[in-house]
Amino acid sequence: MADIDIRDLRKQCIQSLISTAENVAKYLQEDKEDNYEKLKMYMENYCLLEIEQEVAEQVLEAAKADTNISNINTLQERFEDGLKTLSQNRINPNSHRYMQELKTRYESGLQSVSSSGLTENLNESDIAIVQTNEQFLDPITKKHISDPVKNTMCGHVYERETILNLIRRKHRIRCPVAGCANPESIQENHLLEDEELRFRLSLSQHSTMIH
Image (tube, rainbow, N blue to C red; front, side):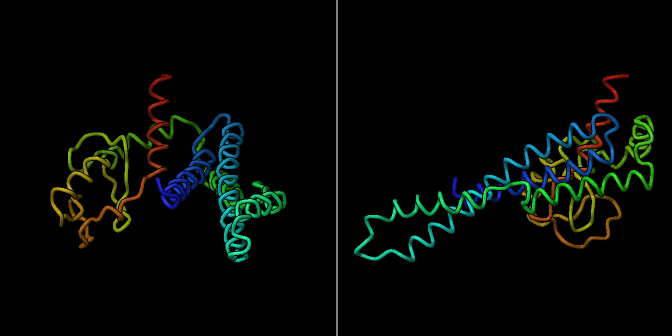
């Protein structure tokens, strides 16, 4: 896998962690802090990888710029020396922008709960899910959604595999939700994983298991 693909995949994981932190603050009643600390630990590891890659790229570019025919044989040595020097000054994941964003989103979720009482109790969350159960059915198969993706053009949610299969079979397909005003054909890049819905569905499943 190419470096660019790995970095893109890592950034998707980072965004999922950030969304999960906000959902933990909003919807989880017990062990909020414990789960947030776990998310921070995962984020630290991702930030370290980001920092290490950024440092390596900077050092490599500097080493290349300083290379000519007379010293080309020492490129690897100069790269390793530069990497060691720069890494000593840069490896601090706690100040990384992604760590700050994780903290901001978690605190934002807590503030939202404080002002609106979203997690007064778990049963109320269950009731809300039951009351709006229609929106958790895939509009194509009418079955319960387990892997939700949201159409960023209109906000409607589908089962990932179902909508992707439909797009691939019919190259020009509009949102299948009745009455949707979005005139655009659905493209794969319009679809975004719905982390909040996935989290609420997991809460509902957990509640069902413990009752």
